[in-house]
Image (cartoon, one colour):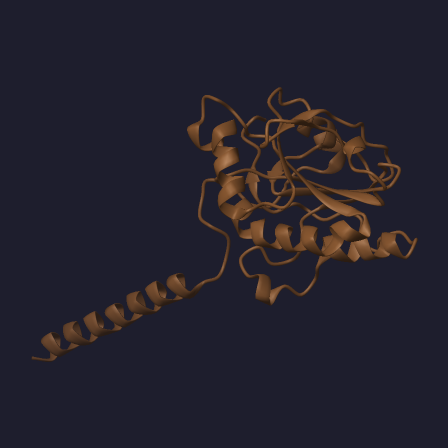
Length: 223
């Protein structure tokens, strides 16, 4: 009898333990699961793209409306919010509304969002140019959404994640590289708006206090 009670007690403890683990796993907040770390692991030197203070070269890429677009097409720009993003990455999707809000807030002040898809490929239906057009229409992007079809722009910048932000000043000098803010999953719980803080610093004619953060997102597939 004692042995039966002991066995029953052990089973109860084990069940309680497993239930606790399962509950914690469901409640744990974090990035979408995948086979990679969402955080950029390489340094700027290892990536080999632009460094802070370097002048970015302009490009000529196809926009979702079928026209070709260059940074030079933005008249009276005081800066450029260049963001490498894509259609399907969960992190890219999390930040779409925030990018729309940033563009709508700052475009009239001379800072437009310029979104570039480094993953575009006709061999990937989800990242094809047609899918980019569909996504831009669905989300009503107020900014350009460009296709890096030759995959030669993102390596110059050193974009390794989607999204990956490069804030340029009016002279196209890189002033900030990294993530948009400190909370990919919840816009409501953001504590530090790295990109917006950098924009506001440029507006004041000062250097951003934080010029580099590690990008959080999916690895660029064309790498």
